[in-house]
Image (cartoon, rainbow, N blue to C red; front, side, top):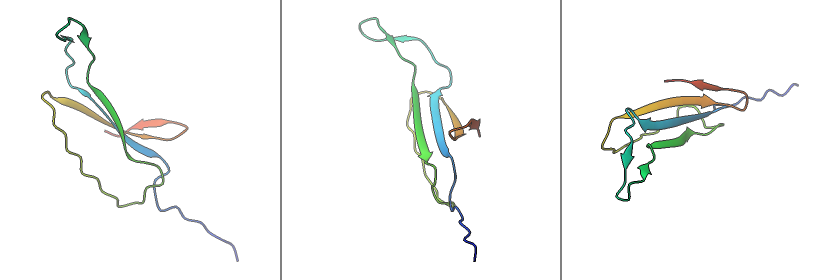
Length: 80
């Protein structure tokens, strides 16, 4: 009898990259530039089971640009 192994999950990470939609160069109280807003977060690590759901809530005073990527060791694909 031959063994067959199945994977019940993705073989890649799914991550979000969140940035300001229109970055504006701002200065803080000391006159130093404030870095542009950028956050990266892995919402589904590799080997996460299929049919897993996540709810994401964001609060920000400006419009945001959110990009979704699937990344493995070999390549990174932009999903949205």
